[in-house]
Image (cartoon, rainbow, N blue to C red; front, side, top):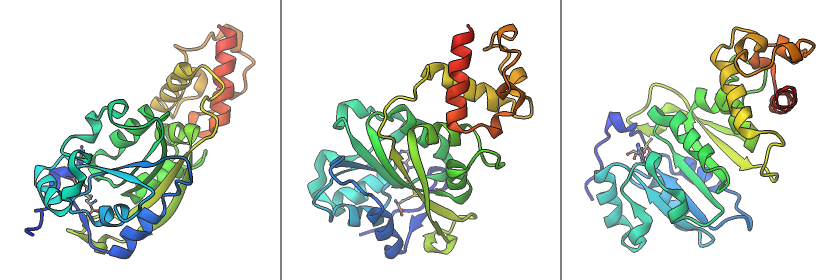
Length: 259
Ligand SMILES: C[S@@+](CC[C@H](N)C(=O)[O-])C[C@H]1O[C@@H](n2cnc3c(N)ncnc32)[C@H](O)[C@@H]1O
């Protein structure tokens, strides 16, 4: 079979190490929680080969690249409509999947944040994610308050998922090799579905806090808070980067009460 030409604008770096592909797929830990697994960006199918060997999963593959799609159609003729040639960022989860499912992928690094926000948009359905990202992005997802990597994405992901940094992957195991190291992370959805606060306001608070991360929260959140009623609030004297998810939830509740 003619191989797929790597296209830079689609973030195509093909993994060549089967052990890493297997280890990535083995990092899914479905138990009885879900059956359907969507692989984003299968490329030439190095992860898919292992995923499709697992009888406990119903696998779906989505790649935006028509050349990859044609390659995979020949490689896995039995997949039928479970092989999709489309943009993951435009995918309508509700029309395709059961209420609980998982996402896996060696993701295109040029759209990592959009992919993670798409997963967050579908957080009620996506109960597990195993994904390979640029190492810095993986670290950002798992980073803790006070570290310089800690930001909007860390808070939102950690609000809904347990985030685990699983292992680092060297550039030499890809063709062509990327300029950066990679890493695989796992996201496991929290058992409790809600955060215990007004979630819309929580998102506004986190975004506003980090958009001006050098300012104290009292200044960064000035358009969201009732300043007079919150003069005694000590959390507002801090910067966003010091607050854990629980701190953001508590602050959101205090803002709600003061309104
Ligand atoms: C880093 S490559 C990984 C390929 C393969 N999984 C591997 O490990 O060798 C990323 C893949 O994502 C695909 N891709 C890029 N943007 C996409 C998008 N918006 N939606 C779906 N697939 C996308 C690319 O075509 C490419 O096949």
